[in-house]
Image: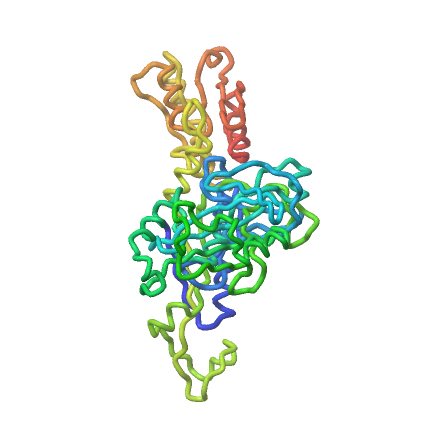
Length: 446
């Protein structure tokens, strides 16, 4: 990881530094010629209120980035939002970790996802419609799945790694004497979260804790399940109805309402955080500012000057992760396939049998470039190892050189070489006098 920490005197300067770092990171990925997305992100445990992630889209990634087809909205799954649409009247079946319920009072198809807290004392029931929204149903999109990040916003202690929480919760429940359930220091809780897409009748039935609803395992029987059953239908911090479903391809965009959202798997390569005074205030990390400089910095201080907390930023690029992600994604059945700026050499020269001296001539010609030409020299390597020609070619593909120059069968008659570029699916004979310019034209595309 390449880490960078920044310190500024004022908020405006800190935000300016933040934008400079973002621009530099973008220039780096542009130079690498890698596809990337810059997503709005949740600062999480790092703190602060401004954060962006740089993602490399790949089907092998574990992160999810949501982007709009119409506007420039891009966000990671933790922060992304989509308007809530009305449910369609259809049942798409069950999902993992859910229970499908067909209520008679009121009549509706509802799914329940269950989770548990890390201390195993809080069982979470997430109630949501089994049918997709009307727009999703029309488009034939997937059955909804719960958004674990939205659940964690209400219950930060959620242990999302548990596949079957009921046995763990029952174990704690069974170990608690019935007459002490309401008196233990950390009470056993049953938390019900209601997704806003459920109909009013269903939400009312859950809020009223109607007995026909399976709030807790049937094995508990008539014993009181806990000190109390909590029902939450609004976000405690925003007081907005809970939106507990994951965004899927085709959902509408909350920013422009004209575009649709796309969900891409990705690998996070970089992250930028504006921390503000999150750490400088607790640590008393201050700097003295003379009174005469306060106006220029737009800081209000006394005439004699004073110490102010520094505005901090934290930024990083996962160098080793980036190399691994690129290698894994761009590789094919022949081997690695590096971008130009990440390859060990731009060009490898491979002589066929008996043409070692000719390969040296080609190497010398490609190396000769006038110092005042304004054109950078090619980054070359000559494979002069005592191995067979087929072995060298397989090794060149395996290593992943962007361009392979083969000194082969047409050399003696035409003084030409075969130029290969696997990324561009190119294989072409080129005369020696045109070889340098032709290679540079290829490299400019990589």
